[in-house]
Each structure stands twice: as structure tokens, then as C-alpha cells.
Image (cartoon, rainbow, N blue to C red):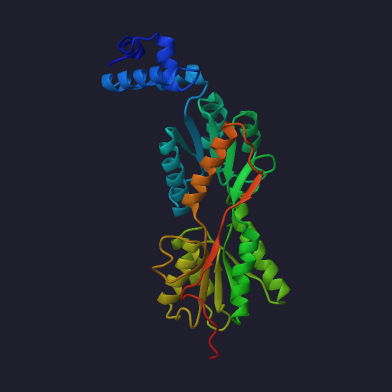
Length: 333
């Protein structure tokens, strides 16, 4: 395999000049740069990332920390980040560590502490998470996707406002028995995004003078199905509309209603948040965010920080209501 010395010899320049021509760091006459680059192409030379890092001080590696990969939301974010970094010539090191787990503690104390990366993107950190102190201590450019975090550049949607909006949509249709499904189960790690959506629901219901009904559930279709089955079991007291903490929960509720012989939307309306790939299949009305784009935007923000430009501490990602057939006015019967 050809090395930098071979490229320099073929181009008739010193190794230092060849290195500057290939890395872009330091002045090289345009005709010399082209000659060196052509020599590298002719020899099939591929620059060593470790050697380049000695010149530039960068590893061209970004660390990505996510709590899990099995959910659609996190998979979409990872795809957007990976796609953007590949275009920019950066490597991605993915760390998966659930909150309050031993793996998460080892991640921050050992792996990330090595600092073999140029920047960090973290997803779904909690505002009171002790990991934040570690991230700040690494003194590397850092962008978080999700909750607002003091002192950290963050990108995410306004979950309180969205919780209010989707609840008010159901109230405007005439529903008075509206339940929230997807509250964080007791004993589970905190989830501020879910708590904020629940808070928006509670605000809207209390402003309307209506009772608040909240059912805990993990954020999966199967858990949403189970919680909704219980919530819909009593025909006399069951809600006429459900606010799902996310689309998976709302889809689980639709399946539960169908199994119980409850027609959607004439007997039960359901609404969610996210814009899941399955939302169209289930005709789910939802507030659609774009986690893949959020991943791409987070990379752009991180790159600007690495180049010395500081973005705003908080950027609100776009979200839009998508109306489908899962919501309508309550039946008069």
C-alpha cells in the first residue's frame, strides 16, 4: 500500500508539502496541490485518519449516545446523523446505554472519558441527569436532541405545547371524556418529554373544567394496547377519546378498541405524537416531527460549533398536525 512518501516522490515534492496538499492545512500552490492529489489518485493512496489527526488535531469521529435503538424514533435519529456524517467524511461511534444502567455509568467514566472524538451528540438526556456534568467536563462540542438542558445546546420540539394542542383538538370536536395513555410507569426512569406532553394534556383539561384521567404505559404498541384495553373495559365510564403519549401508544389503543368491538373514530377517537411510519396505515391523526431531520440538523449545529460558531442554546424543531381519520366528533348515542 502506498504511503505519503510515495505520493511525495511521484509528485516531486517533500512529504510536508504532500501532507499539506492532501489535508488542506497550510498553503500550497494550486498547481502543486493538483499534482500531489493526482499522484495520490494514481497510487490509490488513502490518508490515515490517525496521521491526519496529528496534523489537524481532529479524529473525524463523533460520539453518539442514545438510550436505546429498538424504538422507531431513535432509529430515525441515528439514520439522519449517520447519513450526514458520512457525507462530511466523519466516522460515528454509537454508544447505547439505558438510563440508570451499569453500562451507562461505564460509558461516561471510561469510554467517553478517553475523548477519542471531536464532538458528542446525545439523545433524550434528562434535565437532572448527572451525565450532563460529565458532558460539560469533557470540554468537547456537544449537541443534545430532546429536552431543554441548561448550559447545553439542545434541539427538540415543544412537548407541553403539543400536549395542549392535541388535547384541545379533541375538546374542540366535542369530547369531554378524554384520557391520556402513556404516563411514565412508577419505578421507570424519568422521561421529561412524556411528562411534558402529559402536562399539556392536564392544562387543557383543567382549563376546560374537565376531569383528568391518566394511564401509565411504556411507549410501545403492545404496552399501549394493554393500557387501552384496561381503560376501555368499562362501557359506562370509558373515554370517548384518547391522547397517546406517542404514536405507538395511540396505535396500540386503536388495536385494543378494534378487538373490543369499539369503532374508531365514531365511538373512540385517538391521537398521537411523532409521525411514526405506521401512522398512515392506521389513519392516525398525529403531530408529526421528523427525527431523521433532527439528526441531520444536530450534525450541522455540531459542525458549526467545531468551527467556532455557537448556535442558540435552544432550537425548537418543526412539528405539524397531520389530520387523518382517527379523530371525529363523539357519537350522540
